[in-house]
Image (cartoon, rainbow, N blue to C red):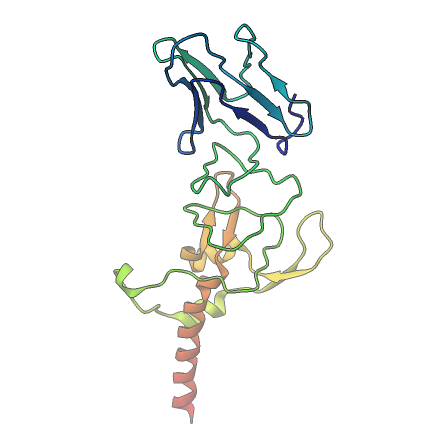
Length: 227
């Protein structure tokens, strides 16, 4: 019996048998390689940390029972047994050998960490109720060649003057924070407010920078005129 995802199951092909794997489809195939006569589907089956099971004669049998999200098919024509993953979630024990792992649902880390070097490419939204910390930069794609209908923000100073900065704490938490109220800024600068499927609003604070830059420039023009 395999007790956890760290256990390994090793197959050794018997006489006139081949065992092939396909990382793309998560398949293990047992097939006859010819040669005639009675054949053992297995010569040895070894489970890490447990006793090796060996086939002593051609009458020995090895029974496979499909677990969750696994199918087992046989083909009498080719004398093959195929073990295939049907997907549908479950734990991921190793994504190193699979260069394109896919999730059928949510990824639950169970208080563990994701560590490593490289890139994580995500199309969509990342929702977090905690703090995201980085030792590098958060970069937003802003290439001119990807944009159209570019306009300088009008009346930027008036919009900034209409904003209200607030101190607050999240309900159920004592830590004091500083920021804006999404519903209030939505009336002034709706482009920086997002609403999720539950109706909860969030603010893209980084996108307010453009407004602040134009507001400072407008203010500077007023100062220059007063000199």
